[in-house]
Structure formats: C-alpha cells, structure tokens
Length: 170
Image (cartoon, rainbow, N blue to C red; front, side):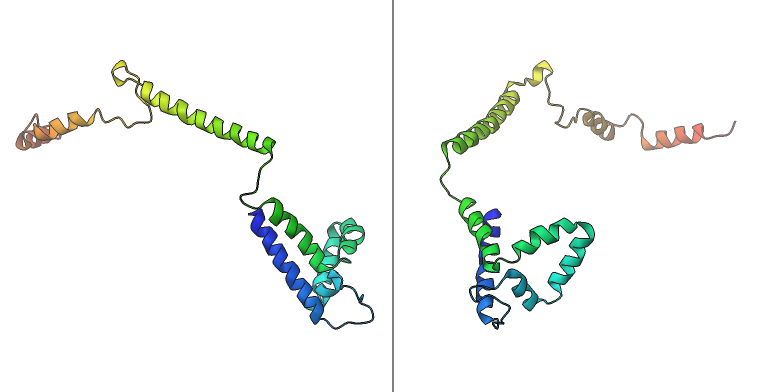
C-alpha cells in the first residue's frame, strides 16, 4: 500500500511541477521555483487561509514555525521526496537484508510449527478412546427420534384417546 502511495505522491509532484510552469510569474514569486503556498493559493485561494485559521485555533505552534516554513518549499519537492522514498523502499520484490530475511524466516517457521502441531493433534485423536473433538457436531440423539417415527409405541388412534382421557374434567 505504501508503494502505491509513493507513486501517487510522485504523480502529484509531476502535476505540481507542470502547474508551476503554467502560473504567471509575479514579482513576489521567486524566479527559480514557486512555493507550495503560492501554488496552493493560486489553485484554491481560500484553502491556505482556512487551514491557517483552523490550525491556529487548535494548535497554533503547528502553523507558524512548522507548516509555514514547509510551504515555502516547492510543491514538487514536498510531494516528490516522500513519494520517491516510499516508492523506492516499499517496492515489491526488493532485496532484503540478512536481518530482514532471518526475521521473515522466524515468522514463517512459527506459522508452520502451529500448522504442524494442529495437524498432529488431529491425527493423534482416537474416537474409540473417548477423545472426540468438541467442535464436531454430536448427532447421537437423532437415532432415537428416527426410531420413534418409524415404529411408534402407540397408534394415532390410541394416542388421541389417551389425550382425550387426560383432558377430561373430573
């Protein structure tokens, strides 16, 4: 997931770099790059102001020293650097260090050990000795009901007469 997030950030970096070239250069903007704040303000004029108001209400220290200085950097750098790092270090099929490979092997062996123990427990049980898995359904009482339906003790007429006699008032 982080790999795809890295690629998304790289795409945003390319879009930001392309949009810088479309902006009109004003005397306030630098000739080398356009800050992320200026680009954001051009694309969505009220966005940075809304963020500043909300951050100053709940955590004023986040806006002035931290976010204000970060937004002075170009947007392509703010999106591109973390995007490149995520895409590079989280890429699928990358070569692992020996420590990472050893940790993976330990996890894999613990999972295989659990599977082997569960399989051994399944084979070691002996139903004749009374070791029955309590998760299996028990259908032992169903035979008695089947016999009662096939060979009733009383006929229907006898059963009806006995019920009538039980319900007679005394």
